[in-house]
Length: 237
Ligand code: CA
Image (cartoon, rainbow, N blue to C red):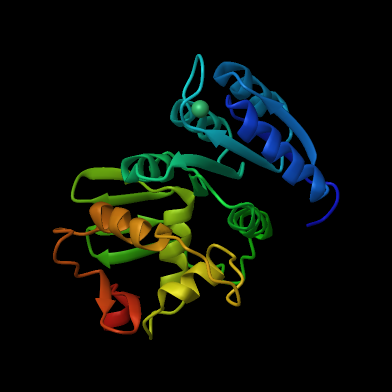
């Protein structure tokens, strides 16, 4: 990791907070750490951090509310949430509120460092020129405004959901594997074994937003044994 990155750690458990401080200092980060939720939000909004690490259960304000408040002000701020290992709903809620990724507690330092590197790398090699994608005539995804309009309703996408769609759209002619999405959209190193369900969770969330019936996907389809494929008006031409 490069030497001038700064991180804000918001975690009330002293043992975990101190462990995180050590890890980030070891990797050359400038570190600020607080234990209180509101104080964490204030610092996140007034400081200029390359990364914010957020616990969920915190005094005075929880990590979900902090994440949401950060996103309202700053769509780009990288945020990683620390969630309980067993609480899948925590993961889904955190990612829905715009966290870039999550690490389940108890976490290994190696896993955390991989996530951090990936989030900071943010390699975007696939920016597509077309910024609106028509699934049908009246079902349109707007990549810049992070929205899906269908019939008369409008649904917001998270930045990461839009990036997944953008990557699939840049590869309309073929299915894209989960591993490729992890590498290209999340920035994970393909050599390393990363334990994460983040792709599956994102695909499910995107389907809830873009499909007529999420259980019978017709736009973000699974190609058995190969991966995911986006079907749009363009792909049928
Ligand atoms: Ca806590």
